[in-house]
Amino acid sequence: MQGFLLFCSTLAILTTFGIVLSVLFEAMRFFQMIPVTEFIFGTEWSPQIALRADQQASSGSFGAIPLFTGTLMISFIAMCIAAPVGLMSAIYLAEYASPRVRGIVKPILEILAGIPTVVYGFFAALVAAPFIRDVAHAIGFTSASSESALAAGAVMGIMIIPFVSSLSDDVISAVPQSLRDGSLGLGATPSETVRQVVIPAALPGIVGGLLLAVSRAIGETMIVVMAAGLSSNLTANPLESVTTVTVQIVTLLVGDQEFDSPKTLAAFALGLTLFVVTLALNFVALRIVKKYREQYD
Image 1 (tube, helix red, strand yellow):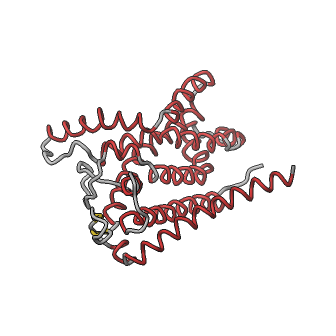
Image 2 (image 1 turned 30 degrees about the vertical axis):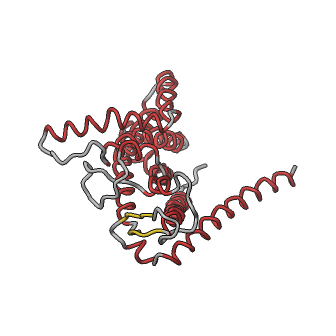
Image 3 (image 1 turned 90 degrees about the vertical axis):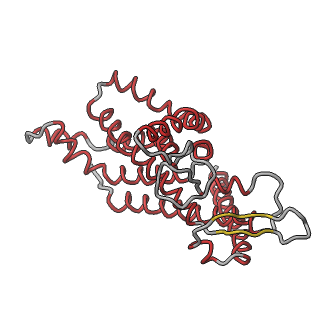
């Protein structure tokens, strides 16, 4: 049994290693054709491919800054919704709700986690995006697009709420009851106990969960495709159409592609960059949890 468990662990590690090497190899081929500085610091993303086989394989601009700007904007909007709502929901369920209410509300809240992302995409495209556009036009923002970063980020935030709530609820519930009893025994109110005792004790886990939720938001694709569009605009206006790294990866690899042109290989460069960013966020989350976690008897 030990040998079988060791084999399973080794297989998972080797699979991860193989994925990284495959993406890294193709990304290195891309950077042999396109300078790294142009990819990282370029402000225009418009890869094009020639239609005839006797022409140059591909041309265009491969500046990834518009893609990362759109990714960060949508992720920021999503976390502005998911973080407070999810955290407040976790505090209520862990500290204030009765067992009966908790048994009803928590499963209903976690139903959101089981809804496919394509359903969220339909909701964003058919309900949220037109509503945001109409409201923006009514208050004078006539440049608001029918596909916007605000619509995609808002619906993505709703999708991430159960993720944040579940992680925060587990962390808050893990705080020893003796800390609460000691605080109440010293004359603190329940709200003061939550603010000054429970939340500080659970803060490392909460921060780690929020960083993991950011990684989840960065990797989302379907909602962005259906609600934010495919336009690689370099803008800070959330009412305009933008795109993200994951959406462009899907766009570049749709259909029959030849893996010898910069346009196709750009997907691997984007994937490698996204992998590094997500890995860094996960590493930071684990370091925060490990460094600041307090052990209680």
